[in-house]
Image (tube, rainbow, N blue to C red):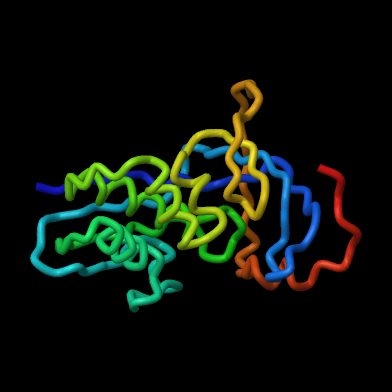
Length: 192
């Protein structure tokens, strides 16, 4: 029997870059929301850990060891001191390198799904630590709820009450890596 988890897109309603740390990461102040659009992750029992990728943006992703879904699964197993297998299928509906946290959302979905499927029951702070080890946006994607983000993205705060509203997301079809965007930044830093 299979189980599934939604990996909803992360949209920053605003993002202020407030500084840069000695390690090169930028500090920020942001309000993130999660519209009802995203990738899907399904797991079926297996003796081995495998990943298949389907969907309209599947050709843009590799199934190799560096895939965030597999990295999340391995990090979860290492943290739990467990050995489990899983046949994972990622339905990639979100464009790659489009600034809406698709890879981070996929990693977060893998953590939620596999913690539940493998009955690990790891505490939320430990899951958040695993998420941060995978990327700065993964902790907020793990919550999947509107949140105010600080630090490099790992400081998660309560979002203000937001009105229900529609949203239009447009992708020009030009992938842009987040690291390149931050590296190319030349403006002064914003006030938080």
